Image (cartoon, rainbow over all chains, first blue to last red; front, side):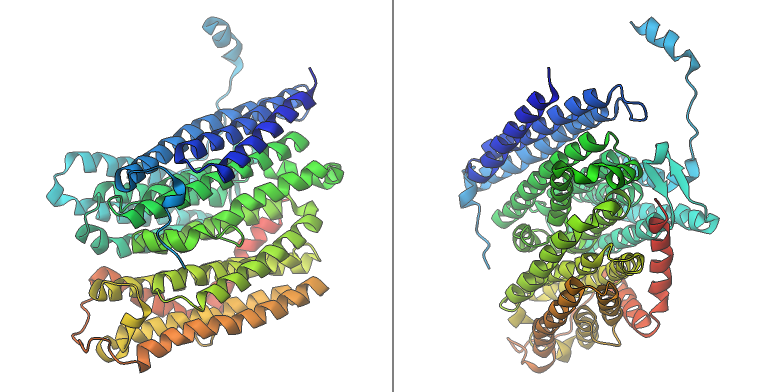
Length: 105
Length: 506
């Protein structure tokens, strides 16, 4: 296995995620697109961590630990995001983000 | 499995642990836990305890900061990932003071509205905790955790008025932009880790200087990371969440977002740029230049046509972010210009934080009576609330940079730093800053004119009753504004001491 395969997969996931955040109107779909970006980050981190594993002087586990932190924080972020989407659904009766745009100027 | 692990760990030595260096954070964590417990075991009538407890916790966390400052030794923890030096102490202190002021601003506002009181202070404390970590973090993981620790509570605080449509919108916009920016930032961090093999900023700095510089991927990583924080400080083109979030969030939260969480973004940018990416000034300079020019100009021009005072301050804070970023456009031209830029950013951040908090205290006090944020409702404020009107004028002069209010010194250090690089980019930046200072005076002074010259809109001139807590914030901010305006050395000594630590960090 070569490193660039993982990096290409991560880059593709990143691009799909960015496209989803920009193009999707549904709040839940946007949250899922953000998850895609975060997973691209995790793939990158773990692949790079494996690359640096046997290099003297480099911390062999830094990338893996970073990925664990990203997973944990992503869970917290999505928890908050779903709470906000839920509050929006209660008041607006929709999760279409284009309609959540009352303030202008 | 477990047995083999235990056998292998027999030579494990507990790392040295410096409790004194971590004391401010530990006090904050203790207060957070205590607030949570007290909130569970108190009835609705005694919910005010949460506010007092949170305030005492913030002040208590200042004590170890003072003892650490008195001790005056740099402490490096966790293999360089967490550093307690003058830079982190000055900014942690600033965050705690700003957090305490925010609690004072919130006490009446939150108690009188239909808000969850205990949880509010819990979230505020957690966000301040994240900022205090941010001041000391010198590691990609640490900076990321600190950013999320301050952002996640801030998303909730922004959407705190959960039964109103504008409150929901404020939370949603802030959340989406914030999470997207931090995801992009993480992708950049993963690339930097890939290129350097380390997450410690000092190690990254060494690698960036050595061979990583030629790799295009380094540019991508650095730009992505800076974009993540450009969002946090609401720099153009990542500013479009700011006005709506500021308007929809409870006003004390708006004050908090516009100073404390913005300052945390600048602190992260400073430690990344000065410790991590110092060898990549060629990439950072043009990037910061474009962002700073856009931020100042767009913020000021849109602010000119605002009719709501909170939105006016939202765009004003966007424009101020441009001024704070501007000195970094000469970063790395020469050692002198790097140093001047750092001093300018720290000075500006300290002065801006206190002045803006004072201005928001006046806004909260006035809107308690008028019930609206329209600028027209401020007409003739001087006739029935002279103290508030004069204080607000002092803050507006400070934000506009007119002596003797403190802001002139912030602007002065920024200009000095920009021209100290002696580069074309720096001189162009100086001209842009000068033009923008004039535009900014347009809307700051028009608010002063409304307060002093216009008629009271409905002829109602009963005086405003200002709660003690708001009065304390306004008074303290006015004293600070005038004292620093007359004796700038009060802040400049702090800022210079703080910057020395960061410059010698690598």
